[in-house]
Length: 90
Image (cartoon, rainbow, N blue to C red; front, top):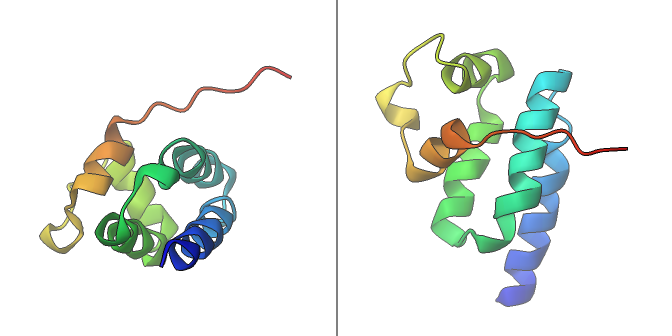
């Protein structure tokens, strides 16, 4: 089971870094790098649902331009909204 979760986390991290526009890559990819290892199966479901939503919609929720629809409200989205991307030196 843990191998299945590890593989799922790896795939979701990959998808999080390849969203379609750079701002979403940085937000979702950095969030995945920092938090995905601590997410359980149910939370991974929530993150996967966000990855399946259109980028511009999720971006609007993250920056507060649009309210989050009830069907996308989740603890993981709350964490993502509170997450602050910090550029890595280099």
